[in-house]
Image 1 (tube, rainbow, N blue to C red):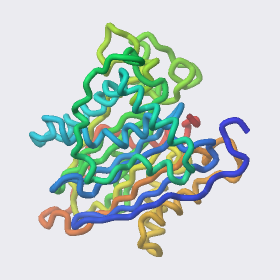
Image 2 (tube, one colour):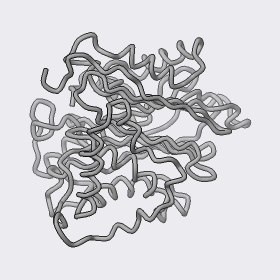
Image 3 (tube, helix red, strand yellow):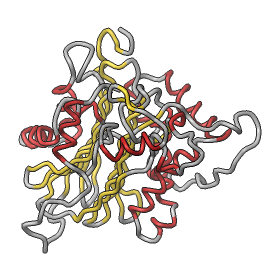
Amino acid sequence: MGIYLSTPKTEKASEDGENDKLRYGLSSMQGWRASMEDAHAAYPDLDDSTSFFGVYDGHGGKAVSKFCAKYLHQQMLKHEAYLAGDIGTSLQKTFLRMDEMMRGQRGWRELAVLGDKIEKLSGMLEGFIWSPRSGETNDHSDDWAFEEGPHSDFTGPNSGSTACVAVIRGNKLVVANAGDSRCVLSRKGQAHNLSKDHKPELEAERDRILNAGGFIQVGRVNGSLNLARAIGDIEFKQNKRLPAEKQIVSAEPDITSIELCDDDEFLVIACDGIWDCMSSQQLVDFIHDKLKEENKLSAVCEMVFDRCLAPTAGGEGCDNMTMILIQFKTPLNPSASDADPPQSSAEPSEADKSSEQTEQK
């Protein structure tokens, strides 16, 4: 059966929470895959004014996605741009910082712990084991000094992970994305993509890949990776003449910022295991329908998995699945009405089209 199990693991690890601005539900399911490589982070109260949600879809192993779930939000909190109120810049720098932190002896040791030891745990637990609670965010993770000794020349992991993150502060929503996980907003029942699927065939991605000395074969970077941006994947980041954002595969995220209004119903962040099976609008419609009968948001996520799971191994519906559903409490902004559709760098029609054509990682 290769990378697939003889029967899918359909146990779901789910969680719900809320604060005075929003409530959320999330779930993860291993499915047909031989291992669970997704991770996530959910902090409705990351600090006094900010909520943070992230989905990390690993490939080639689980260590990088777990690393991001453990450290990305911590690093954002500590960045000088974040402390100055610039969430977008802090996210952009933090995505690139993940690659820097995974180098050297300490990076090697941390990845070994996250990858090797966690493999001994059940698939149902893996998606949650490195989602540390918000009380653990104020450690000394900035003290990431270079360490001499074995593996001090470790350049980074060959496995990788997407990262799709949503940060909410007041009525402002900032989305950062690298890879083909996706963030979608439902406004008056209409799906608005707040991220772009970074596939190799997109013009900007293709140009960067070729300029950095890579190639695209059967829709894959250097014939192997079917997405053009990711954290990790150091084998694609070896051109010493180019900065990090210009490498064959880049960890630099697209940043989208919008103002939320009372017409905004919910936000979805999910890995491509969902988008392989449903377009953004199809998922929004499905969630609207299920919310009429089910109030528990994690249960709605679980219904999405059951809808997407393939009856047999191979093809769409066989990937790991992770999804976070965030529902806004109203009124968000009493003075806002008849808001225009959110403006972003995402292109909904292209993203939905790419989800239909996407190959399994």
